[in-house]
Length: 60
Image (cartoon, rainbow, N blue to C red):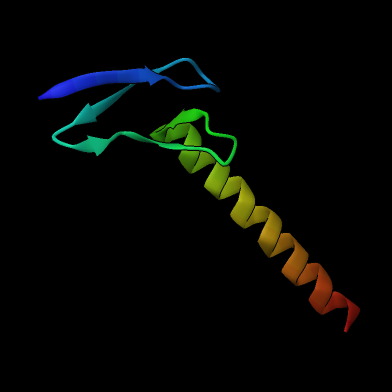
C-alpha cells in the first residue's frame, strides 16, 4: 500500500509512504525531502566535513 505524503521541498518529486516507511525525510526546518535530495545533501555534507578535516590536518 502506498500513500502520497507530499512533495519534495527541493525538487518537487512526489514523496510516498509505502508499507509504513516514508520514502524521504523531514529536514531540520520541517520540510519534506525526497530520498534523492536527502542523499545529495548527505554527500555534500560529507564532502565538506572531509575537506575541513584534511585542511585542519594541513595546519598541523
